[in-house]
Every structure is written in C-alpha cells, then in structure tokens.
Figure 1 (cartoon, rainbow, N blue to C red):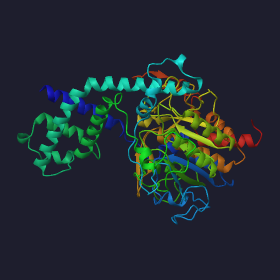
Figure 2: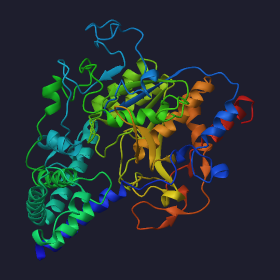
Figure 3: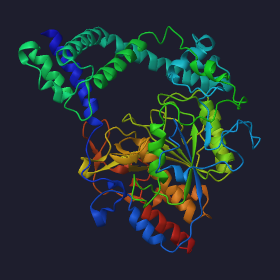
Figure 4: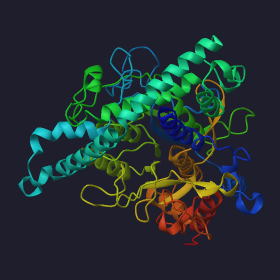
Length: 535
C-alpha cells in the first residue's frame, strides 16, 4: 500500500504537468482580438490593419533562430526567405560566404555530411567542467579581470549542479521504486489488452477482477488527458527519471562533447565560423515552424493560420537544439541574420548560464549598428529575471544597455483563467512587455495547426508587430521600433497574478518595465503620430 500511495503522488505530480500545458481556449485566435471590441486581451490586429489601409508596405526579412523549420509547410513555404546569391542543392557556395547551399538560411548544428546534432547538454554541466581545473579552490580576488565573467558563471553553474544533486538525492529511491511499479503495471495492462499502445478508453474494457483496482484507477486518471497514451506517459516518466539520475553524477562526471565531435568544430573558438550545413528541417523542426507561423504565415488564404505581418520573408537559422544552446552558435546566428538582410530577429529560447555571453553581446551590438531589432522570450520558469539572470539579456557583461532588444513575458486572458501566464518569467527592470503566450494557434510541421503556450509564442507575437512596423514604416530605426512597442501597449488596470507566488496579486508594472501588454493597433497609431510630428 505504501508503494501505491507513493506512486499516486508521483503520477499526480506528472499529471499536473500535463494538465498545465493543455488548458483549452474558449476561442481560437483570441490573441488577435481587441479588448474593447471583442472582450479579449489580444493585440487588436484587425484594428491595426484598418489604420494601415491604403498604405504601401515593403518586404521585411525576419530571421528566426530556432531548432529548424519545415520548408514544405504550405502556410509558410510562400513566405520563406531565399538567398538571392545561392542556387539550391547544387553543392556549391555560389555567393562565396563560406557556407554551401544556404538557400533558406543556415544550420549551425549540422555536420558536413548533412547529419544533424540531436543531443543537447545543459550549459551549467558544460561550464562547470570546462573551468573546474582552472578555478576550483580559488576566490574572486585571485582571478584576473578578463576571467571574472567565466569565474562568475562557473560558480553559478556549480551551485546549480549542487542543488540538482541534493534534489535528486531526496527523491531518487522513491522515483526508482515508482518507475518499476509503473513499468510493471504498464506491461500487465499491455498483455491484458493485447496492445502495445493504449489510451484511457481502452482501459474501460479491463475487468477489475484481473487488475489492481487502485492502479487501474490511477492509469485511467492519467490517460484521461487528451492525446495521452501509455507510451507517451512512460516516455515522460522515463525522461524525468533519467534527468534525476543524471543530476546525481553531473558534478563528478564531465559531459561528452557531442557537438564538437559531430560538427568538427571547436566549441569555444569564435573565430572558427564556417561549420554546419543547410539541413534546416532535421530534428523535427516543430518548434521553429510554429514560431515562424505566428510571425508570418500567409494571411487570408483560407488555410492554416494567419500570421501577424503580411509582407515578410522568414529566414531560418538553426542554432538551438531545445534544452540549451552554445553562445557561439547564438552569436554567429545573429551575425548571419544581420549580414543577410534581416531587420527583425526572433529568439524563442533561453538559458541561465552564459559563459561566453560577451560574444552574444557583441553580436547584438553589431545588429544595433546595422539597425536590426531583436525579440527574446523571457522564459518559462516563473522566475524573476531581475535577480536570476536569463540569457540572452538586454545588459552586456559590462552592464551596457542594448536598446534594440525586447524581452517578452507571456500574457493570457480572462477566458483562459489568467492575465499573466503562471509559467512566465518576469522582471520589473529586465522584462519589457508582456504578449499573448497562452493557447496560441500556430502551424506545425507537415500540414496542420496546434494550440501551444510559452514565451516561445509571446516572442514571435512581438516580432510580428515589429515586422509590421518595419514593413509599413521603413524609416523607423530599430531603437524607435522597440520604444514604440514598449510605450504603445495596453495598460492593465487590475492587479494580476504574480507567477510562482501562489496567487499573489501585483500590478503588471511590477512584472515588466512598461506595465503593458503589446498592442499592434496602438503601435501603428503611435508610428503614424510620430510620422505626423505628434511626438
């Protein structure tokens, strides 16, 4: 009975994770609507286009630094950027930039033979062992000035690994026992049903007399979630178990350098830039496809979804695997985007350790010098980024402010139960605005759509608005676009739930510097006022 009770606790813990990600909206595309006209806390997109009626636009290249994209997705294929200097798939570097066949963009996570990296190692693990021999046993006073940032991030990485070890140690025995029990009952149910993969509906046919009543009830509760199968649940449970097993050895065992071996690249030499391949669709590409669709999926074509901006070209740069990213890959991805004409860059990724942040800072400053806007999702850990650094950030290692970078938290709607997503990171100083990020209708790889949540979706909402401004108001500079988006959003009068606080109410101005949710119509109106000398 003790094992059963423990299993219930673990199963319900995982069930809560699943449920939190599958809240259903009351209306599709709520994030495009207007609060006064429709009653939803969207971005007033229809009203923005009404203000732009009769005005000409120019095409704007939006770079999406992500995990990849489906270049055949029908709602995106017509809007994909094509490198004018390249002939696709002729195995030649036609434009002479040192990168062969970069027709739709470039993949910094690919091998010369076309294979794509599929293993991700967290930067805290990498950073701790990278500098362990150099810094262990030393205090800050003994570290040269030019190594202080590395030392700072090494210390932070060590604290993270220690906390992870302590947490894993506290649960690992019960977790292993629960895994064995879940695995054995899963096998029993597969035999009873004569199915390898089953759902909650299948369990209705299992006689209570030949199955443990309490465990059967647990499985029914788990599989009551939409699209959940035993295989999906066991994979999630197994991934969680492996994560905790890994946390027990991270301080004592260095990670394998999968990236360097496959890519034939020096992970920590920023001068070596000619690596990767042009395979953008490997490793699924689901995340990058969804993100790109929010920005610029073909509008008014009666299929899929309508993106925000109506005259964009999406440039895909694969520099993110999912769990973590190398600063080198991010820095070079930004530079590639800038050098190939992007005016807006979307970054729906992030991390908490950045040993080579200087390279990313310099890339963002380079983007500023070339008049490029960058938009970054603030993260999904209900964390205050004013006190817990989240990268890429708007302040350099030397604490210089980067005025062309927007940090975006995730907002919701009363119909979804909250105006601020409970998972969203926040920061009174370091997060600029909030944007819709709960139950966002977006495209998927292949041909179809899904509802997804996260600041990964909030960021392209803002990138789409930035692209709209750059398309219809091409004289605006990057810093002006950022300023307009920050100042033109909708002020939320009522207090909102502070993420991770258990329901504590605070003004939105305590969670971001503007105290606003972005609004496309407000941004267009402000741009028109500026054009007419109104501010």
